[in-house]
Length: 346
Ligand code: SAH
Ligand code: SF4
Image (cartoon, rainbow, N blue to C red; front, side, top):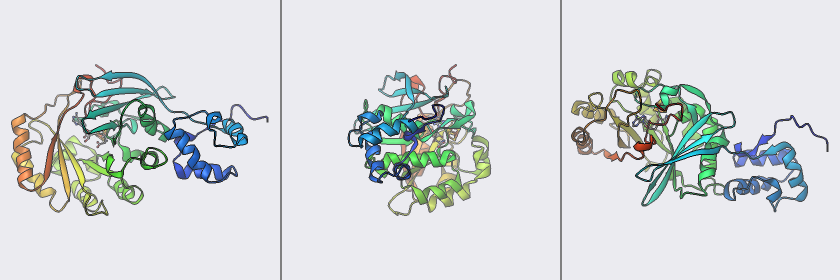
């Protein structure tokens, strides 16, 4: 059959189950072919159509003319003293993103990137210094999992790598569909967490289309300070954000997790802890206090252990479930907020 070799092939790694079913239906095939190929790609990790033995011979012959299955490649791996691993992925256009794996006795968490860089300019974040280049495709997001699931035990995924996931909404939602799909990665909705800086209208959309867990980067108890350290707050101020969080989960047993990075002398006073308690009144939530992780060119410092503990005690006394998250992988710049790829190296 003559076909145009310059025609761009469709990368089926960009498709969730619904997309694959549409794709096969359009080809005149039965919908179940979509589920079959989903399993081949994501469960068996097969990318060669010829090896997909339950497809008809005719289909196996036909597919490579119009379709392909391509995931990004790992080009570098670093291992921290604490066992945390950082992977550098090379994308087809030469861009790079990082993925972090955090092993713990009872789980293995993969921290996945959603964009090359980030446009939001939070003052304490290394990714912000890169600026924004582009959104990742579905294949590039889920590919971080695809490449690593054969080597590592992955029980949890957090969208807390580079980028603001809700500003790459469609691709992130399709990638999370695959993470939850029993015919793909089969992770529980409690074990896939999207972290956002608080893009309120997209949070409202997300609750309609996905059941994943939600973390919100808060980092300040009032608008004045949050405007300074997270410019996105000028667009979506705290009251709007709190309302979105209050109504986020339809299931009353689920809670939003707030992340709060402890910056010495900036957001860590007892008075600010009390403001935070007031702000969170009526919001069912947990708080993760993060130690600030430094990166080249930044002047902030993490709060001392005493200050951190005093802050935490005020939240606990107010009945807010608060934990201090361990810093992992800081010796290889794999900790929260240190991801800047090779470009961000000093
Ligand atoms: N853009 C999303 C997800 C990626 S950031 C978001 O902002 O939520 C993942 C978490 O690391 C966020 O809570 C972020 O605020 C936090 N973080 C950023 N820079 C940090 C730093 N230098 N030290 C500690 N945590 C940081
Ligand atoms: Fe972007 Fe999140 Fe970093 Fe802010 S903290 S710059 S939103 S990646």
